[in-house]
Length: 171
Image 1 (tube, rainbow, N blue to C red):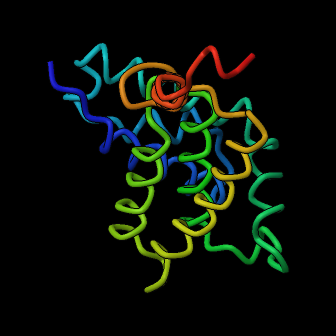
Image 2: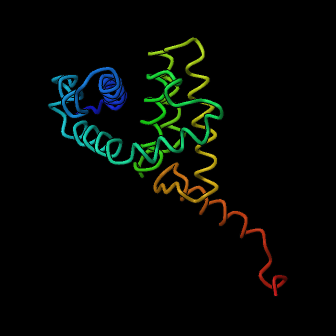
């Protein structure tokens, strides 16, 4: 079955938006947004539930990263759509080991273009996510495994760098 990750991200964004403007919980807000296709796809539902669960559990931590990187901006001044796109992408970067960070950032940019709260939303989202990602990577807080992901890339780079060294000259 086909997975609907972009659609799921958009539905979760809509749910996050809903809870900011209405008095409702995220599960209720997200539940009524799901399509029959997503509901019928076990992989899609697994991704939906995992992403939603991690956003709920880690929102305070994620918001601290956003605050740290939005100098002179109060969280209430950041457009609701942009803030929630950043939250969702950071959740993927930090808690979805199988999704490359660049994919999460690119998806966030594309969703920001679609739901643009301002004409500069995609640039704002990109800039904030890039800054946070670089800090997280430097702090060793991004743990990814698999094809095209960070840990594998670092290991491959270390192997390539090590191949050019002469073991006898190292002593």
